[in-house]
Image (cartoon, rainbow, N blue to C red; front, side, top):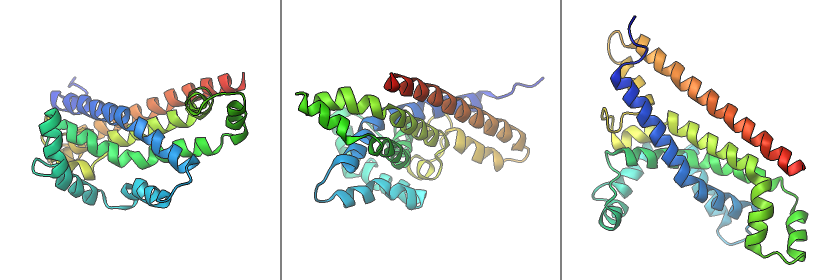
Length: 231
């Protein structure tokens, strides 16, 4: 019996998990900060921030990838700065795929977290402040625990988007086997090869299974968080 997946497909799967993990990990703090600013902030430019955060949802992914290439490419201003300061290269590397996945998943993450923050009764935070808690203490002891279901949901959405991201990734980092070829790019490549459809279907089933497991884990963690909040 032939193997379910070949070496190239296992490599693409591992790279996809790696890209989605790091994209979620690094974007989550910024996602919470943006969601908190949009939910609680009353400042000039709030609407502009909201537009910028959600732009990747409405722009063609290839446009996002092209802008990333202009800004974070080897000759782009941000790309040159990151390479000079940290030795970090994005263009045509897996790090670029992670950056593209983070950008594309960011609006979904922010929206989920913001909805969770909007659902929190402001009176609870005000009560903590009247009892002498500072802003950081209120954030850590009241807001974060109550918003945890939304934070988990946002993280899962960001991870799932990272696993399935295609347009911005292929534009920014190309489709290089073993380096930038994620699961979605591998499926696309297999569909262009005669006889590659069965293996592409197997990869699609793997993608569905990973997404289902991620959602299940998120639901379990969110349920535990809600029970703690009730207690």
